[in-house]
Image 1 (cartoon, rainbow, N blue to C red):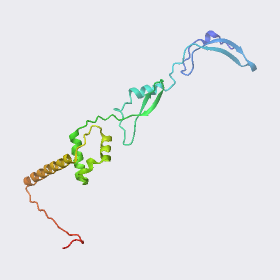
Image 2: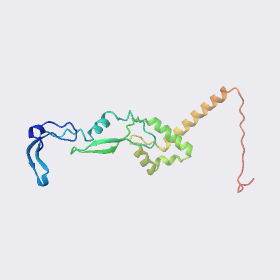
Image 3: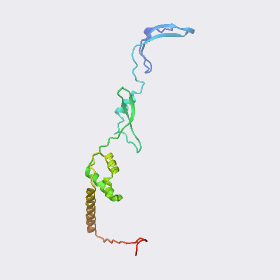
Image 4: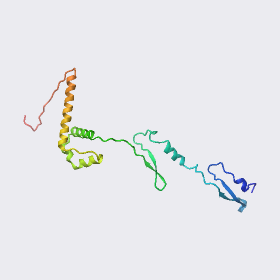
Length: 185
């Protein structure tokens, strides 16, 4: 071959896709094409793969750096037990502190706003639904709900009374009474 010897080919290549090798034998093959028998001396460094993307995602792209728009999700790299990796949707870690009293007030407010019957707390479907939302919520009885509704009414009444007493203007309350066509006049 034109001046190529095994000693000349021993040097490491500078191109990242080429592997360092050792030339074992040089020969001229059919049709005069030179051929060489090579032995790889070092393993490939892995610099041409995508491991740099994995390292970047783990170190730099955490949730605190990303402001996701509504409807967007973030992917995370999940390592399997066999050493392989896969992508999974990253769960949002929201710290929720459960408060029984806050939940009770919300239940009372819901019953009052939507005019649900007080017996809703006895319905099996409603109890099952509430338990699926938060297992820690202690369901109240119909009588407890009634007393909570009355407490809420009295609180609202006293705050409205204080507001009206402290206002400098006058308040006029007008009512109208109508009868249905099927009732006697």
